[in-house]
Image: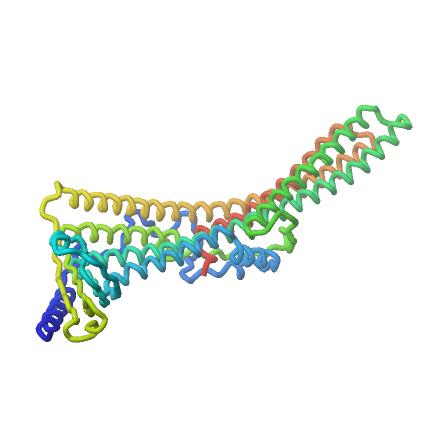
Length: 466
């Protein structure tokens, strides 16, 4: 029995020594570089910010918007799916990691039967009883790093799922902010339409009285009624859009259809004129989708190592320790003691290039992941530069739209005065009313687009998920 134990110890020591001195095929992953990284964004103006960008909750002071964002992060169903996927990846990574260590088990059996001598010769059964209980050992020694590559690949997938969840948070926060500002814009346009309708109803009443007294032609009355109907028709259109936006927001928050609370108006939103942009190289660390793409690339790289390790033999250790006896009386005696240990070496000889093709497949998949990483980075650079351009140009457009509203309002006042004193036709008044209505609506839309361009910029910079 001592010699058996000694042999088992020799096998264990050999396996441990082999595992400790094993070489890991497949190489070591190095961080990818992107050749087309610009020194700075073309649309960036002024000094370059190199500090971390602020959180979403610090950028806007609208407490209602902050509450909507928090509710979305807590209750969005897609985000819950991403969180569950992370947990599944973590458990899977734990399973792969556990493969580096030996697994222990047990088995027990009891029974018996009757078999004649001829039957026993052909394995037909056993005669009398049989009692067995064993502790088992199974261990695959990671000689070539196959298990370690698999473990690293699964770990990268786990971290990639976390980055994917963070990227989803960025998108969700940006979507909530965008939809909220569109909602406030629709509220503003609805108010403009209602205010315009009220003014045009009063104008229709006055012109109808003048027509009844024969002071104006009937065409003036009909044109006034058309203007009133034009403003009235805009109201249900805006109301319909408001309901759709509210339901979109509530769906993002994991809620059933219904109203949405309002906070500050578009004109009350505080937007910092100092926009943090940073260097293009910093974008590689800020954006979670870029980090996710890098993790996916590293995982594919490790799968190449797994494929290469399959070219070499694998060493596994199995052991059994326990007792076996045909009767319970002799079951736990030294005569019933059993100790076995085996080392198994298995490897391929000729498989018609099957394993080599698996390596090629893994390399091509890694190549796809690398090109995907590069495309993600290039898209990120373009998004930031587009967002910088959008914010700058929408700010310029908003200033022009505001001047247009002021001019249209003044022109309408003068045209009405001329009409009242008989120096112009009512058609000129109609034109100026339409100019003012369109200018006020366009100014509201442009303000919303300016604010949302900052949301787009913040999203493109990868902020808001920390």
